[in-house]
Image (cartoon, rainbow, N blue to C red; front, side, top):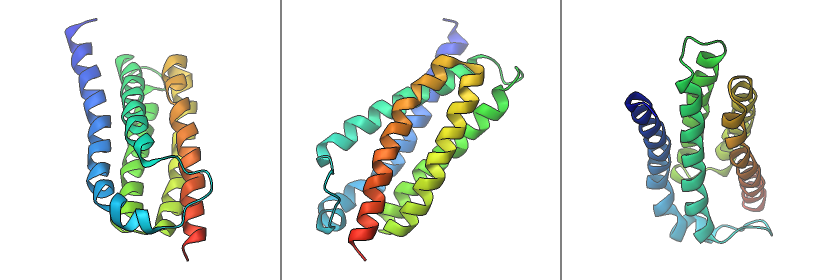
Length: 159
């Protein structure tokens, strides 16, 4: 791997993990207080599962966007895929701010639906450029599907 690719890979992973870090600022303070007091859907994983899952997903996202970026932004289909990836990552952070920071399950529902479709659109775009990059995002949309169920459940159970 060329040194410029190593820098792109490291930057891609750092940016994705950084998004997770920003989100954790809002999450950590709310878990033992506000979130702990909420009624939750029947299938709610233990809190200890969320951190390792998200760290892994952000790593996979970083590798996926690197594989796209590595093709060159001037290559066919790369720039739109690259842009939509970053848009969905911003929505990802905004969901955390809305749900945990603002303590708004309703705003979370709105944003997580937008996030789910943005991830789907990203996967479709990524598959056109790199099947591996698209495949690396499948666990992400699966987890966000679970998170959507949890978010809607929290919203419905906590009027």
